[in-house]
Image 1 (tube, helix red, strand yellow):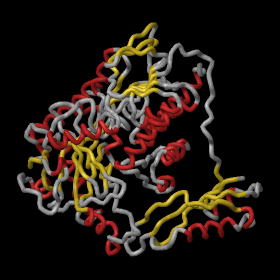
Image 2 (image 1 turned 180 degrees about the vertical axis):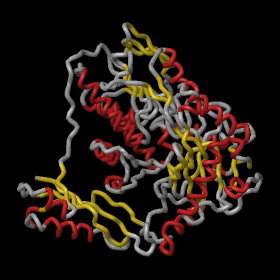
Image 3 (image 1 turned 135 degrees about the vertical axis):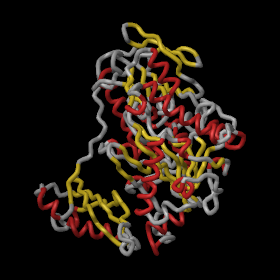
Image 4 (image 1 turned 45 degrees about the vertical axis):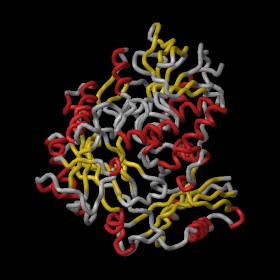
Length: 533
């Protein structure tokens, strides 16, 4: 069997997807007999709403063909068709013995997928997670939302599934790696909706993602992995720049190799590793606020008179505005979602966004952030962390020092005023626990000005985006890791032969899918060096 994909099948959005399958088959019949064409499936679907009077879905259809003739590439391209090959994950196994089991620190996407690949090939990893399992996380998050009692190790940032568990479960990625399909297929096997296999902007939803993470835990344990929750990694012992033992709040663990699949918020762990002379460099990141609109108005701005049609997905956007070396942009857009209280340190306020799979909430929210460059904080890794922390403490003070968040209407922010209470758009942070403040007091002046210009530009792109009653809530500071742990081509940390920094916290990924792929690549490098004892 050979596999072909027919691309760029554009159909009005009300047209059945079966029509895409029929069109793809007709295209393939130019080259092959009907009897040789098998298993036609939708492999990608994206929405084209650039023309509101002609909103379309654009499909790609994959087929298996039993005819093994080679068709000239030029002829295939003329028919928007390509021949593809799937590369299975095929580890190469090394010869070096492991004195003890591998240890993976972190049970976010990177740690989970690194551990999964190791476990599938008999390496029986030990996984350590400073936060709790899903039920414990849910209880801690509810306590924080209702009583403003923060658990610094068990919250929206830390615990089973990582920070992504309490988000929208977005799987969009810019990386072009065939391992992405392995990640998506695995997530579906663990309970994610099958639509993520073909939607151009796949998402799982926080409600379903919790089950997926729990199922991942069960699969790992069935394969021989051991997972320790509420176990914080606090240090390690090394001989000749090789880790032999690690220290945790649960005691010591023998260690043949150490995978650092840290989240972007593991600041205390970063600081400990700096003292251990791991090589850190600062990197660019972004800071800003969460903006909330009525979802119905976003739908109207994107779809015009078609807004509200159940055949269309909830309106979703991705906007950017550039000025020189900096930009203002939106990301982590949560249709029908809510703004979450995402602090992980006492005395700081952090915002994030979350949606359930149905995306049926009243408000839409997204981060609107501006670029922060290493030159803004002295090109020093510790200063990068402190830059974020300072903004979070400022947000805590502006919110009233009780974990309420500072908020401001867009009208006040753009008009130089402060204090107007929300009207049409009701803030969702902690069910409305916000204090009206001035975001110009929260953000650095250059960031506030760029944010102003970005909002005005976005209002020209989506009617009503800069509506005066839209609400800003701050601060959005955990957009990505502010540091990178330097590693070599074999994925080991500079200066250490058996430490493997990977994923978002180590500065090598951004989002669930790319972090998972980096974890897979890390596991492949480990297996290439070590044999399974």
